[in-house]
Image 1 (cartoon, rainbow, N blue to C red):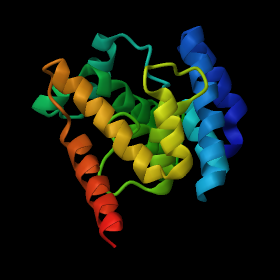
Image 2: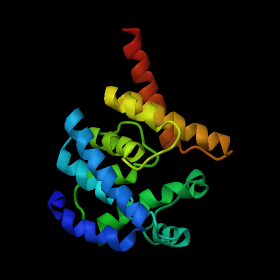
Image 3: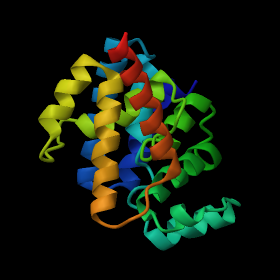
Image 4: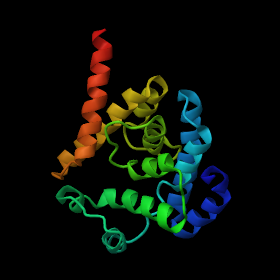
Length: 196
């Protein structure tokens, strides 16, 4: 069972990540567990997913591209132009193929923690939000994001996706279709709740 391997994963991320990214991973694990307990996801899985979500983050970009190519991953045009999403894709590959992680929900949570996607599981949403709200985060709207997180995972998802999409648009960069689909899904869900 992958959730029983946290000591092993801790050693693995210690080897692979910078001090800042290592601390971030511990903080995301703690926040993911807290959110899982609050919203009814599996807290052990959430902690494990948080711990290993950035396992490929500090790999050089050329190594990430090489890993994706060697694994037969065909990047879309948007993905080729979006190097910030590569580490999530590589993270899933490292976990699956090198560390033999078998829990598909954990693997998917790591894979989509950057872009999100439509039809996310509760665990996937918890990891996505925990990455935004971990203890060391200090971007301008982090307090608003944390406040929304306490009210509703969907409100936090919407706010986080808006933040990311606006940032990409302001930088004149492409927005991953998975992020747009995730935003549309959560926006429609919240809009329908407001109309009731």
